[in-house]
Length: 121
Figure (tube, rainbow, N blue to C red):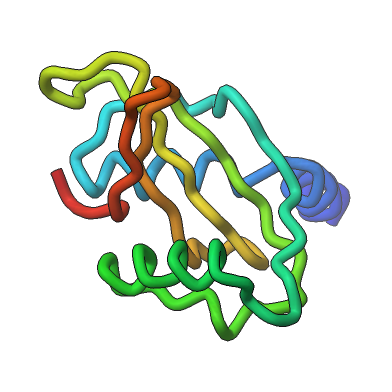
C-alpha cells in the first residue's frame, strides 16, 4: 500500500506536459530536446482579434482550432528544432491544455523569419 501511495505522489509531481509536447514533435519527425527552452502560460482571449484570428487560420491548416479554448489558460512549450533543413534558429511551439496538444507552430526568431503550421516533417 505504501508503494502505491509513493508512486501516486511522485507521478502527481512529475510534469508530463513538456515530455508529451516533445514526444508529439518527435512523432511529427522533428528532433528536439525533451526539455523546452521556454515554458509560458498564455491567456487566450475571450474573443479573437485580427492577430489571433490569423493565428487560428494557421492552426486550422494543421488540424487544430483554438476557438474552443477562448478565455482559457494554456501552456506554450517552445523547443529548439535541430533538423529543419536549410534553417537555423527554428523553434517549435506546442500549445497544451489539460495535458492535451491543442495547437502549435514552427517559426524562426529571425527578423525576416517565418511562422508555419505544425505539421509532419
